[in-house]
Length: 336
Ligand code: UDP
Ligand code: MG
Image 1 (cartoon, rainbow, N blue to C red):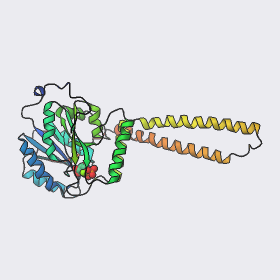
Image 2: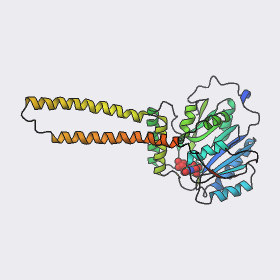
Image 3: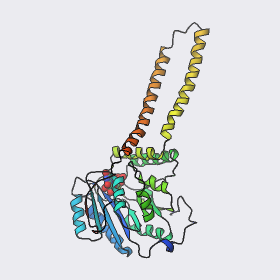
């Protein structure tokens, strides 16, 4: 039940032109406190990849875990030459872990998948098939999501619809970061040095030939979500503020609206002052106007502040993430 999205299937070049005969497949796995699940993930991922019969590597990014994740990844790496490990100096967040994985992946095609087996690795074969047909991005579209709270489903649904209303970039609904990207797309993403990264939006912005592969998102195999409400809100804010300046325009509309109201108010005041005897009254409406204006101004100041803060952070030009350790890479392969 998959359909090409958002581009029609026409106009695809002959894939044999630009797809290598035996491509290297990289799989990027961000891991934060995943000791409970990593021992399940690796065997399932590597048996799926081995069955494809293509050369592959798995790039695990340890995003500053506080548990035994790094030690487990080291063990896995020691026993499997397909495995590479990148360890951050601290927790930088999911989107940056994925970014580091992409930066360190050598593959002709790069697959991004969560560590918790919510995205079935078995789909990677289908993604590669679509890539070989000529698509540059094959992203998973979750038709069914198992084991997510009603609250998460409702807020996620609302968020993606709001984001699409506000943004000029059409960001496909119900997608996550589970996707395959071509080398070319990965290189393009390296040239997007923005700090507040909303990868699924960035990939949508890039364009290229994209294909939506429908799938059922499972429940976590083990462990707990690493996205508490606070992180989810920050992520949603990044999505909207990075892909839309519509919130800034709210100021203009609110201004127009309140100005229109005050013109009516002034007219009414003048009328009562000149033509009636009740012109002393009006404290309540005065207070109301002052409070309303104060509130509206503070909200708008806050929104402007969000954007200014982001400009400030970008202006410092700090590195996006810091790598503390790397295992399993060829010696000649330089770190980014
Ligand atoms: N993750 C990460 N850094 C973080 C939070 C999460 O690398 O700060 C990883 C996590 O290990 C997992 C993926 O991002 O592989 C998605 O996280 P999770 O499954 O907790 O999110 P959910 O599926 O609940 O939205
Ligand atoms: Mg998950």
